[in-house]
Length: 325
Ligand SMILES: NC(=O)c1ccc[n+]([C@@H]2O[C@H](COP(=O)([O-])OP(=O)(O)OC[C@H]3O[C@@H](n4cnc5c(N)ncnc54)[C@H](O)[C@@H]3O)[C@@H](O)[C@H]2O)c1
Image (cartoon, rainbow, N blue to C red; front, top):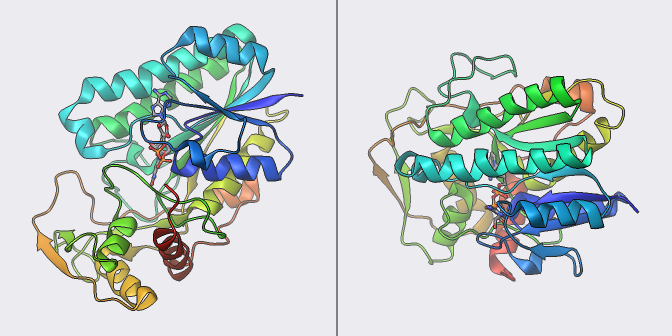
């Protein structure tokens, strides 16, 4: 039986995708070093604990497990940290990504789904952002994603390795049965922090800047339910069968919510008061990021089904109250 290698499959988006792959009849094998991932998030027997930098291990997995394609989530993903430690980000995100692609090339594995990010666009020149929008990342994290996209273009040309780069906007929410969810250390994403504030685990929510040119002065982001992302990965993996080109897709809803709106709606969903405090703007935070998702709808037949803000908050809230990891 052929397998799909899922790097970083014990992490937040990866674990939801692994489950979606299983439900669609695929056989995922997860490689994760568990630095941010959780063994409990992966079905028994499918996790290999190891590091992407280990080319010998990668070689043996691809060989023994009859790997047919790769879904690549593993990497570092803190924008601020990437600014203070750029070398580490290029090493992990670009260096390890290249190691993986070289192993694939040696074994003739030609299907690759890549976790890219809306960070490749930098400060948007217009909204909503479509895939052809200029790419001007404003931090090493976004730059590292763009490097891999560029390497993938060359691998397509030289080795016919076909890839789909999925540029997610803000992943959020938890699985509909609350068995999988977001658990990072440290947790920097807004929605889990807001919900932890609702539980009294965090004293207050920081609103970084309230003088942006947006509806209420706080930053606006496009939140996409993690289950919708998982569905998109399976659609992208299927699309690669017989594909003669590589592709890039935005994954977002086309609707943005401000930080204040998220806090207010979370307060309604949880029935709790959520204290907040305005701080100064963070460098490199664009006022508004909203996706134009029409290309994914057109070519992958993918449309968000679970990404209303209320559903995102409700699933994340149920998860926060019953977290297993
Ligand atoms: N969460 C978001 O909103 C978002 C948005 C855009 C893009 N992304 C990208 O999606 C991917 C997954 O994001 P996530 O939020 O699930 O992050 P995550 O940290 O939960 O998952 C990443 C997983 O990769 C593993 N990992 C990291 N380096 C590794 C290595 N060298 N070897 C083996 N395993 C390693 C971690 O242990 C973790 O389980 C990342 O590449 C991220 O940059 C995320």
